[in-house]
Image (tube, one colour):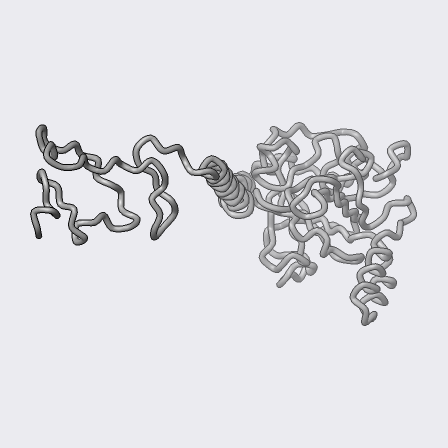
Length: 333
């Protein structure tokens, strides 16, 4: 290095040049240094390019677009957070709520079994077939009083029916409309149940067809109900090769009404309370049959409408504790 290249403590040689893209060191030189030579170079005010995005030294202003990138980054993080919250909600509704509801359902079933075993009957052991219309037994809301079997939903399907259709009661199992009739009674024994989540006892209510059986067990009796509709039309629909035509024909078979004008299945608005009247859909008529009605949300994952299934009592058997009705797997009674 020559004396011309090194003056006043500063190195102006080619080897000491600042590499492109590096931030410039702006540390002040020692006092008195550089007095016999040219002053040190001033720090740059504009962007120093080379390599990545432009960088700034000194009092340079932020790059154009940094504010937009910050907004977009914040919006993206907000979307991710919202997605995680939605995912957690779906997990809770579809799985976690089922775990809690199953535990509550198990508890009410055990309580009812214990009551029956010790001779206590929430319905007082009376045969509801002979009870005058309109006479009700007072049941505490949330208490179980009967068991519901639907063979079409599987051989292990059994749910304890609780009194009431409030949120807390429906979290325990299918809930009985408190102003409707009781099992076996002339009129309409109506109940509601969740379709998705919270135990989802009526998840597959759309799979019930004309002629399918619904069995209700009380301490004193078994009551066998049969889903209404045109059974012959239903079996004819099963032979159709087109899936769309078959589904339409099955719906038509379920929509067929009985002598009281009651269909096997209907889709109604949530305000259509007439479906749980003593004669479903005909609140001004006097009932002559023992009916059963199941209600749930429709379509699945929504509460826009209600799916309603109606059935009629076809036979009853004393519950002696020694066997099952023949409508249930392994039953012989």
